[in-house]
Amino acid sequence: MPTIEIYYADICGLCHQAMAFFRSRRLSFVAHEVHWDGEKFVDTPTSRDMHRRCGPVDFVPQIFVNGRHIPGWRKLEPMIASGEFDRLLATPPPHARSI
Image 1 (tube, rainbow, N blue to C red):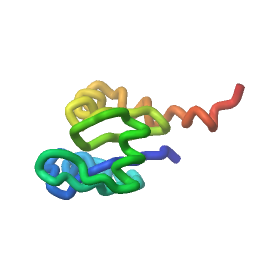
Image 2 (cartoon, rainbow, N blue to C red):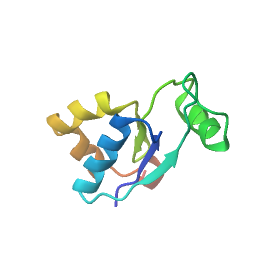
Image 3 (cartoon, rainbow, N blue to C red):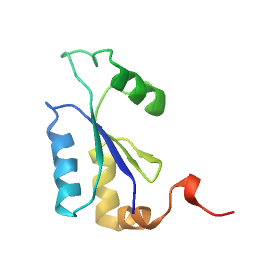
């Protein structure tokens, strides 16, 4: 089963679009909510974790599929159209690959 995580803000329409897409495909995912104060992400353990994993990002969604970072819906959308997303779903996470 693929592993999908998304960092999202409730006010982000593209975040909701990404999560709706995952739901429409019946894909399980873990959603990590971060809060935007109008200028920056509020400092919380979740936002610190997002920055640790993604770097100094200033937008959401930040998506991870089987360990691969996809920075935003605008990067994910063409991956869906090209079939790359489906190939990524079929690729085991790095820690699950046999050597």
